[in-house]
Image (cartoon, rainbow, N blue to C red; front, side):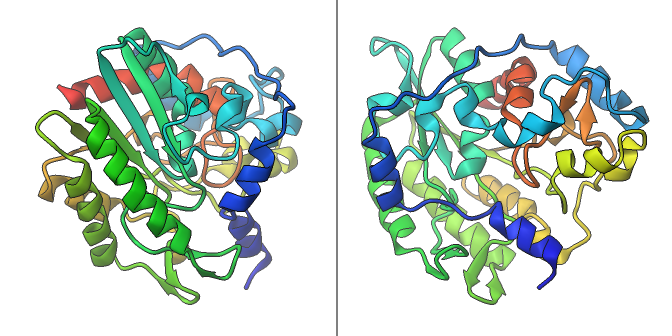
Length: 319
């Protein structure tokens, strides 16, 4: 296994339930930043279009390269730091009297959208519940946990419990989001698109009702190297760190076609937000933002900045 692949794998390792319980029991409070100002949908489109022309790292970045490794969800929502395994107060946002409820469900690729979804959904009158489990996708499958070196039975147990809880709660909207690159069914086998689609269809069937709309967010393009690391070596040749929409490494390719097929088959809405991140390929910088904090997660500051455009896409899908 190459050094590059090992670095990538480390970004896919999560924490188990036991670790979460220990950390959650701490009385220490996490520092929390104020959300950055939102950029208009038109301005996001303009910045993405021009991103491939950026040659030098801007003198002033929204988040300095040396701070990018900390630009994840707990920067703005400290209670989402480890995971959200149930309908807890720490992972619920908005008024208990809200007439509409939106659930954001999946793995860390669900939580990374929280800085875009939470503030905009609250402004639209929703109560927001975030339910995320490290390395446990939205698809109802039994994933191989790369950190533990075994199948993750806890993920399956969590799925079936939380699906039941969601069905009883009858939220108005459930947004599914997940990582699909390097999704393994055992130690040496990647999930097939067919198996992944089947797992997602089970999830959608378990959650969908006449009162609940399901949105399936497409997985985002994955990078072979963390942008801040690459940019530190290429301060005046930014596009050296650009990545294609589809990673050249077959193991790092997403199962987006399977996500789309599952949504279509089960009457859910498939939503791709890639155009808010990438043009014909993915520059590491859009405007003054480094868009990813590692190889496969959006920087929270960027997700928060594009929240108006994200919400516009979600509203269009919700109908």
